[in-house]
Image (cartoon, rainbow, N blue to C red; front, side):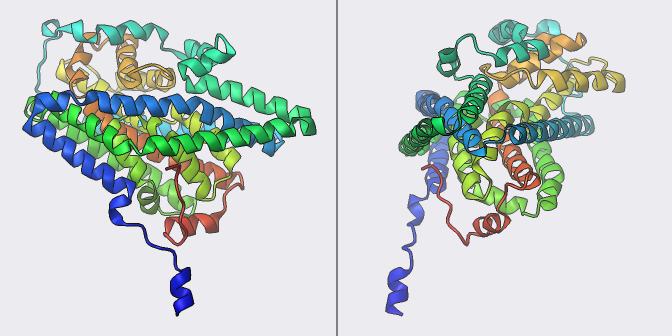
Length: 433
């Protein structure tokens, strides 16, 4: 008995759990935003600083993870096979998301009765976003994958450009064979170093969450958003329906529980909800999915690619917001126009990688492409865009987690028993924290 008691691992105090600290910080931020909105709005730098600290690490993490994974895979055909499976899966799921978003907004009809005159809208607030729409589109998107310089991709933090360079470098190391072994080992050590830095930065996650949520509540409040509450509530409901109705069957098909997966990545979801960019938890997701039994090389390819191609929540947002604006401005928008919108969104939703405020920029670009919904009407959702982001970013995160496990299973790169133990809580799986 004594030996067993000595060998039993010491349980971690509840208050030291990151998700508890983030939850408390979010509650404190909400309280400050309600009690003193002006002070809450001034907390924005805390959230912005945390986001910047994480984003500075994303490029080296992707480079080290992908290069090391491909070098150890040593099979270019397999890399291509995983990439093709991922792209096909992403296209199917984002199309499903767009269809669900269109159906939901047509059933809920949140914009009907608002009777907004587009001529009365002050478009000055959206000018910075509209100016960026020239870079949106399939061809510019493909051209943007290739960086102007090798170092430029890392300096700008463009995920797709870094991924492109990483794949090329991984292939080069495979061709070099044994001669590349010392460099591969060095890259592995560099990856461990960067993940250690992530662990240091994550100590500030509660502070970042506090600042971000205090700013949101203090800046926008609740009363000023009442007129758009139906859109916001309907959008959150649509996200839940998509997660349960679309991702749930995929999880069951792959033999794991979606609810247990959500519980497993609960800390990351809370951080996403508070800070809104899902990039803040990309390093942790790479580690957690690998610990859950997915092969490292598959995780390194699927997650970064999914951050540009598998934005399920963003697709829900684009579909819902576009039709909402048509309803609010009394713009005729029948079945034919909505099918055209769906086809346009299949292109524009993939063309926003690396653009600040991507979802909002793509929304403006999509309205420009339709030619029927007034582009100036996007000003109607500018005020609640951040609140809608708090629904779309966790949906994106869950979608990419499910995608990684699914593709790993279909590729034979998943330890199913380890996944079961981790999701059941039988085996600890420490994240990069």
